[in-house]
Image 1 (cartoon, each protein chain N blue to C red):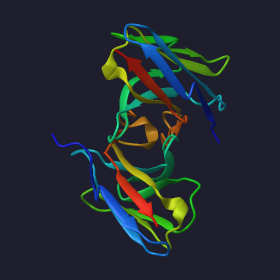
Image 2 (image 1 turned 120 degrees about the horizontal axis):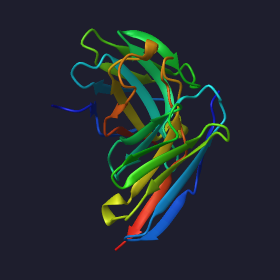
Image 3 (image 1 turned 120 degrees about the vertical axis):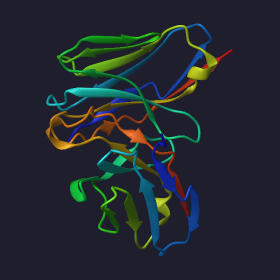
Image 4 (image 1 turned 90 degrees about the vertical axis):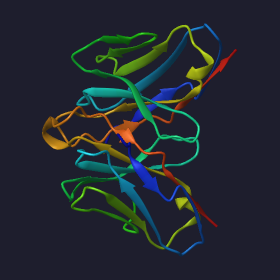
Length: 113
Length: 117
């Protein structure tokens, strides 16, 4: 089955800095890579996703890049703000199938004011 | 519109007991999935249901079971509870499942936190 590795487990930055979270996956058939943000006491919420036919996708301060050859994808957050503090999860799945994503272990992002 | 709702939000059980967790999906969503999230880890897939049929099952023992009702709500049952079952149980709904139906986005509820003593 799919295996998703996520690093780092904790990331501490100053407000205004950039943050990068990296993930690798094992199944070359995976073609859909969502990122979820989980705030304390809440369920995960999708913030951005990318499909395998695209190398990069951007949405305001958030961007995701995908390297299919190396089987890794990354989340980039620019101009971080305290409200970005949360746990971020990457995931990998196969669209067109039953779509059951495999999640990474999560990255706790702390943005210091 | 209401999001995914789960009940109860918190519960405490003792080893050997049984628990039932409930989930109501977003209106119009026909697929419900259940995940277990242990502290410090990502969600682990337990079950997926679509149109009342089981479409996927994760690597969990037979003590775990689920079902989906005609109104698309769902229940997760766990029998003979163990200390290791203590976790946040998340329900997620989506528009569809196989065949690429829907966007693929999962909408999660806030979870049911189960503590087994």
